[in-house]
Image (cartoon, rainbow, N blue to C red):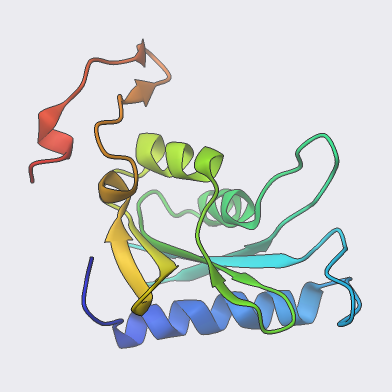
Length: 151
């Protein structure tokens, strides 16, 4: 993990927070709502793309996945960093397991901003899924690739 956030990281956090602050439908006294998380991703051109979650009892998409889809729709092909922020000032929230697997499979080397005991820090997705097997559209689950973890 990196010891401190960069200015670009703080800008990403601010974008996610502003997005959910403007989009949440949950009362401040109640965390329940359909839109309670905002996410922001930064592509390799430095552009920021945002999204909000769509909660549904069947497992609607997390804010991170919506932000990734928005980035793609806006022409981004490579994503370098991602963060999610909870509504009503809850701050940065780490990605769920499903999101981590998707980030690992589609965005190798992405920096993930998440809370730690030392405050918000950045970690490479490979550090969040040690010893994971890669999945690809064409080949399904692949054998362990030490190059993803040793570099």
